Structures are given as structure tokens and as C-alpha cells.
Length: 222
Image 1: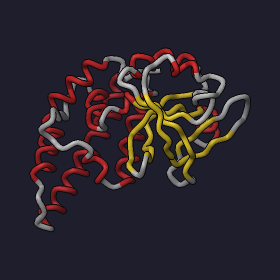
Image 2: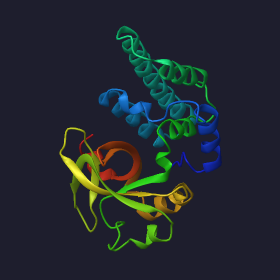
Image 3: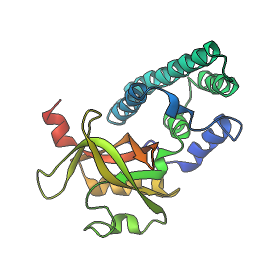
């Protein structure tokens, strides 16, 4: 599995360069939910690509969707004569970085570091059989929900992201050191799971988080 967040310092450097305190953060929460879902789906698809050119195409399309969503927001604010300097600044940043040499790090910066968050729904939760995999990392836990389907075809639960499904309860582990452990966690989860990005509601606010989806159900319903 490709790890787009293996270099934390690179991602943080992009965040500082693009958004470094001078540009609004969390603005992506105001784009249409359907657009956010399409962007995340594109990023997730890129993670499964074998050829670098295919990964870059998927991420490039996702960047274009973010840009178009910001343009729509900017035009709407202008029509309503609302302040839009921050939107215009964000749009300028996006357009200037459309050819980023590190598009994965770019999206990590845009979505406020999802590489620091993992939503879990099964054995990785505190008190469950594989809790030790995360207990060795200093961080905190919060309750959340994500729309999807959970089944148990074997020993372990299997989650599939589905925006039309009811919300599923998860626990979100957050740590700035988490991305250093994703290679190990990917190996632990094995070939039957893939790490994807999903929108998770935490205390009424959407956060983009990593989660391990089961591959088997996705294949059966592809």
C-alpha cells in the first residue's frame, strides 16, 4: 500500500508554505458535501494505483475539483456582497500549487492533517484485542461517526464507506506521530484492508480521517 504521508516534515512544510497562519483553515468544510466526497474518492483511488502517472492524474483531478468548489464559493460570496478575501487568497494558493511536486502532502495540508487521525471501528479500539497497535503511540481518542456499512464476514469487522448508509460509530485516534506508524499498521492490517480517507463527524464538525476499509466487500459490490 502506498503511504502518501510517510514524510511528516514535508507535509508540514507544505502547510506552512501554503497556509502558514495567513490563510483560513477549515474552509473546505463549506464546499458541498458531494464535492468533498468526490475529492476524497479521487485521493483514495490514487492510493491504489500502481503507476505514478495514474496516481498523479487522480490527484490532479481532485485538485481541480477543490479549485472549482472554491471558485463557486468565491462567486457566491461576491453575489451576496459578503467578505471574500480569505476565499480569494485560498483560491490563489490552490491555483499556484496545481503542479505541486507533492500532491499527497498538499491534500494533507488542505484537510488539516488527516495523516494525524485514524478512525477505528473494531479490534484497534481501546480495550479490544489489537489495542496494543495504537497504545504505543502518544495521542488522544474522541468519539465520532462516519456513514458506511460494517459487516463481519470472518474473525474481524469489515467497514465500507457509503454516504447513503446510516452513520457508524467509530473512535478517532489523533497523534502528530501517527503517520510514522502507518507502514507498520498497513502491514498489520494486511492485504484484505486498504487505508482510505473519509469524512468523520466529531462533536458536530467534519474531520477528514484515515480508516481501514475491507477490500472484499468492495470487490463484491464493484
